[in-house]
Amino acid sequence: MRDDKVIGKTISAPLLAWYDRHARDLPWRVPPGRGRADPYRVWLSEVMLQQTTVAAVKNYFIRFTSLWPRIEDLAAADDAQVMAEWAGLGYYARARNLLACARTVAANGGQFPDTRAGLLALPGIGPYTAAAISAIAHDAPETVVDGNVERVVARLFAVQTPLPAAKPELVALADTLTPPARPGDYAQAMMDLGATICTPRKPVCALCPISKCCDAFHQGIAADLPRRAPKPAKPERSGIAWLGRSGDAVLLEQRPAKGLLGGTLAFPSTGWDGQDLPAPGPADWHRVGEVRHVFTHFSLTLTVLTGELTGPPLRGRLVPLRQFDRSALPGLMRKVWDLAIDPAKP
DNA sequence: TATCCGTGGGG
DNA sequence: TCCCCAAGGAT
Image 1 (tube, rainbow, N blue to C red):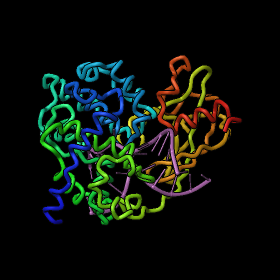
Image 2 (image 1 turned 90 degrees about the horizontal axis):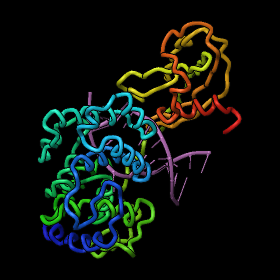
Image 3 (image 1 turned 60 degrees about the vertical axis):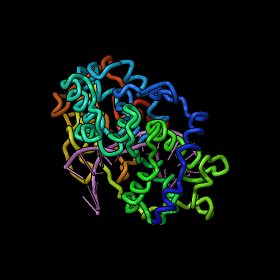
Image 4 (image 1 turned 45 degrees about the vertical axis):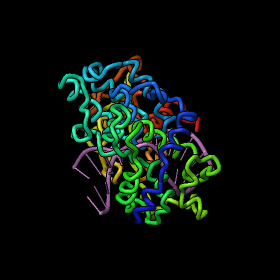
């Protein structure tokens, strides 16, 4: 990479001017020019946004900040309630780390560390989130690199190396672009640009404020970048889930804290790797159908059995329907519940 | 370094 | 229908 080429990428001025006019109105965002955001809200939003779309996060963020306006409130919250409020958002290790982080920060006076290194030491905060909090909440000149920025930078410099191998190269290039002035607005502007203009499929280069600086645009290959290494095929797995009833109660259990759907509420099931677990209690089990669910690295078909328990359950606990809330279940288990409630509905 | 970890929407 | 992938982190 030639030095003059790097220095030539003076994108921050037109990008910030664009951001001043087009910044999206988001629940966790302080509009440009209206001061710094609350570190607690920045942290919470950034953790929720990890590998998750803005649309999916919005209502969760509003709900969480309504229930727990300050980090001390969240730190004092009940584990099960936090897991229930997180249910449906996915990647449940985030919820466990969220609570651990909140309790650490609250125990240290309620103030987040104001350095990238201090933030990195907290559970659930990695390179991206540490840089984002530093830049957005503290206006520190940190380089924030998420999937959007990777794409924007890959196109700006026409990087042909496929992801994820290209990541270090893209981070280094992004670092040459971070301006000393308004780094927080700059970071959000890069991400907004990636989300609305420099999109994965059909980038709208005609509306891009920095297309003049973009190698991929000039070469006519913006839509082809970044390149990606081919992904391994997704294996198929299967298992059985039991929806046991006893009068007005349903049989539920808490999944083990670690691993898939760790710590979430669930109907008892076999393992999904071919394990042959017994039913969770005596009942005249009968099949109601099956549900399909696609996880990040495998697809699952779960056969659903229901039955009225004729004796005490061997595992899990009976929860009265009055205390049961479908929204406390992760997505897969919502499908199981919906199937058992109304097998005719698709 | 590679694998594991959810879910929903868009093309 | 299927595939892509989204403001990643932990191990």
